[in-house]
Image (tube, helix red, strand yellow):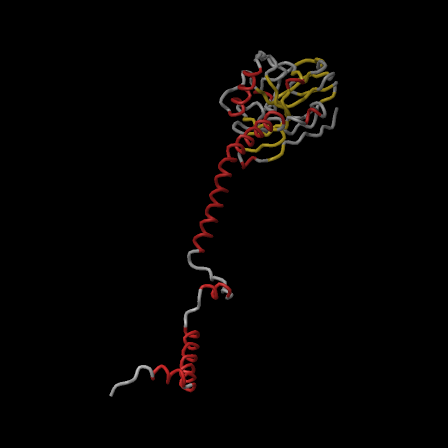
Length: 275
């Protein structure tokens, strides 16, 4: 059986129900297709996005930052260290030159108060406030030493090397006890010391070895001191070649034994009953 082609379009166009049915079949299908279709980039752009959780890759980044910060801190300290060392060295030299200095006891002239090998600490400031007093243990330069004249550069180099212990001063230092002050009349009779006609007592620091020497009487000149060692029989002091000691040669007052630890104690100035 043949079909008339002119009737097929006419039936399709003329039957409203067929057209509606056709449309009805097509609409739900297209609607489902819209729901199931993947979301377009434009729609996804406006949708709120969740905050990205930190990943394992972020931990090494923070660690690297901390390591970098520590490395910078260590580098900064390494740069500052030489400056700190120089400042500490200069401070130590200044303290040694103007405030305190340790001295080694090389002889027995101050026994039993100071023994060979003792190290004492000397106060260099105290005599800027008052002159040396009777009974003080003082360190002083050789009163007969030759003064060495240096230019500023040579003097600075000598100051540095002496502070380091690399060089030794040409002037030998001595340590003795002050017995006579300027204007005092000093006399030694059979080992007994007289100041202005009165015996100096008590002297608990004197060596038990009896001294029988005689000296004086003589007046201590202005600006000078009369000194003696506590070991009276074995001391070159003002009775011998040292003579009177100019006050401007005094380095300072020994006030404590700092070595050895077994002998650590203060060196106090005794109180005399007279004069």
